[in-house]
Length: 171
Image 1 (cartoon, rainbow, N blue to C red):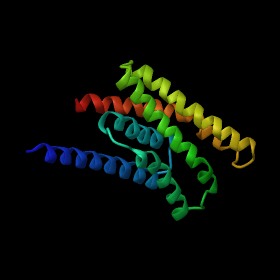
Image 2 (spheres, rainbow, N blue to C red; image 1 turned 120 degrees about the vertical axis):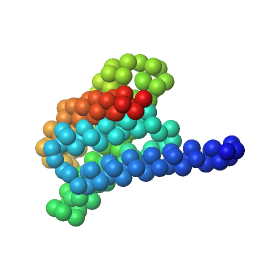
Image 3 (cartoon, one colour; image 1 turned 90 degrees about the vertical axis):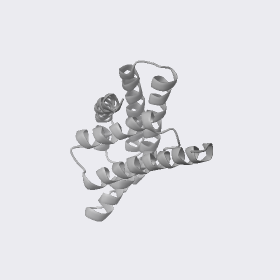
């Protein structure tokens, strides 16, 4: 196989992984709404697992879970306009989670669990901070503070444990 074909196979493999992970996270969020601890942990495990398996841009993977939740609300229940206000912050928090895990674990070679705690903290603090601002501005109800606060940290940590287990089995 020549070098051009090897490159095409690698690109196709990356595209395939991004597509599978994105569709998986979309349909999990679309199909299930609760319990948040379980669904959030699974979604975060997909995000964190992508750090070790995808080298290309994962932008769609960052937004797929919240799009799935938004579509589910629009199709199967009362449309929650509040999620629309939170979506950009959810996307950025997912970006922060992936980038910080990649930085600490892959680039700096820090301990996986230290990196997970720190990255989960970054994600949850960011998301809770902007949720608090939206609540303070009376844009969204304060019930969102619970789901966008400490629960986010727990779902990151549990998702990281799942991802760690999958990574150990894979390698």
